[in-house]
Image (cartoon, rainbow, N blue to C red; front, side):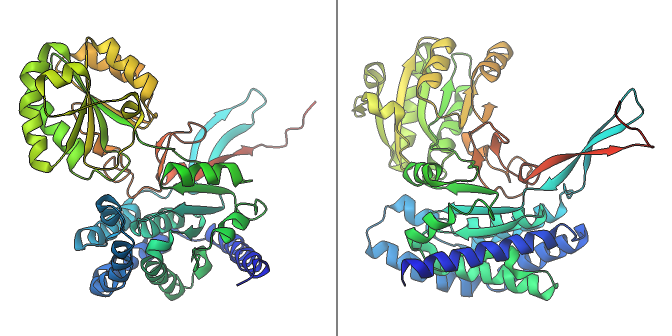
Length: 421
């Protein structure tokens, strides 16, 4: 297919999305909710079919030698499919933000001024090897009144097309424009580049994936971009922590699903409890096959760990590798996070209220937790339903993006004949 055909294809997709977005504004909340619940039902009914299609993608990825973490993100299991279905049902159960008047005030001249939530319009999502993003993103965009263009990675192409078709056929059943959800059917990079030039039709682009992809999109896009570059997430274990709790959190944050952006990459441990805490924790990590890289002080207590380099403190491993640093104080932990963190997710384990509050106030991240795993930086876990991504850009959204973050507000004014003098 020539470059001219790529331009024609993506322009047609974008135009259809723009037209569909105008129709979505008029949909009732009940219709949107019924569509989402029906898609959830179909996901459960057709899970074996979806897994067979996904198996083609997984087998090809294995042949190409992708990492275990990559394969994990790519695979559609019963649990992942059920998670997608439940996510849609949770989104259906949430209040519809479109049309909500979030604030009203009266001016001295008698005018009533307010702000009403409206959709953003057409959103393009560019993502890599997680086919579940296809459903999560489509569900959230649809409920918030936005048309969505989904451009997944080539490794998940078969899975993404199949999931997109389930959503599109359901829209058609409810007499909703099926072009409200479109999956780009080719992985060609040139087509993505052309899409990023279409600011006339696409209102926002959200890249999800590795840092290279996100930087590429940010450099090329002519429309606004909401993104996070990487997740260098820390857990700080204070000298006033419940050490059994700290061990459970540290294991979960690293091992429960190491290939995701909210997994812990660096563990910070206060020097006063390092000797008691680290050897036992290291034995637990050994059971999970975690490779440990530590500062010189850490190596005193975990002699089999590798010595950490400066690059390790910046690293997003997305794998069973963990950097460990012993710090002298809470202040040093906060300073380390400030230097090496990525504004994504940070956690403290402590029984001291004042220290917890200091950590919450001074650590700059989209989600900051006290006595809980970093793995909770997730729209579903925080009560937003499925999420469309995590933003560390601060402008418009900071943290997991749910329904409200996929709307903006316009001013509405009620008068009774006022004129400006």
